[in-house]
Image (cartoon, rainbow, N blue to C red; front, top):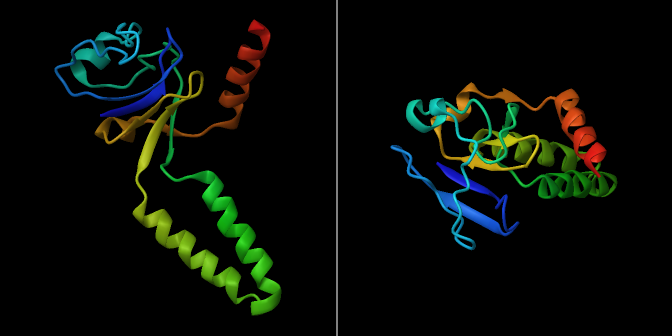
Length: 144
């Protein structure tokens, strides 16, 4: 499994690759154990029941695609629609369908935004839920 996040201790960007049996992965910058909140289900049974970095119980899955690039494609299709009599919209739709079929999924934490890739554990996650996202966004806002 690949993990991309910020270290909870030194706040440096980190990319980790780990496998089971799970050793205590360390931050490459500060050398501290980053999985302080890993449960026994995660450590031994390979079940992603909560975020091992921050301990949040809500995780979601989404397509592993750069969202800014996707918006850029749509904008180009809309801008080109005037000159191509709408054919650029059809082209963008076909590109979107092709990319949707080819791109894998990633799991992400609502609270710390950690991204988990290349794991069968992602199948058990639910899709993005705006209500849960708002809960965590408001929770962070109250801490300030």
